[in-house]
Image (tube, rainbow, N blue to C red; front, top):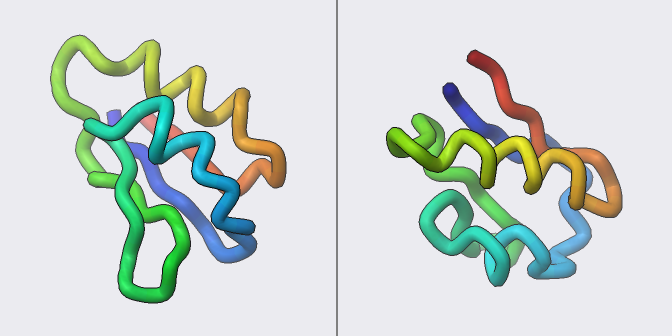
Length: 61
């Protein structure tokens, strides 16, 4: 599974704080995904997609 953050991130920090193994802050101060989701963390990636208040997180198998 791969997780991405598209344009429109409002830097609320929900994904970075809730799932630090999957997201971090980039140089622009917005969230950035690690890309390939580590084995066993697929449910966390799906939860991040659901939790994002501006729906800019996507996960694909």
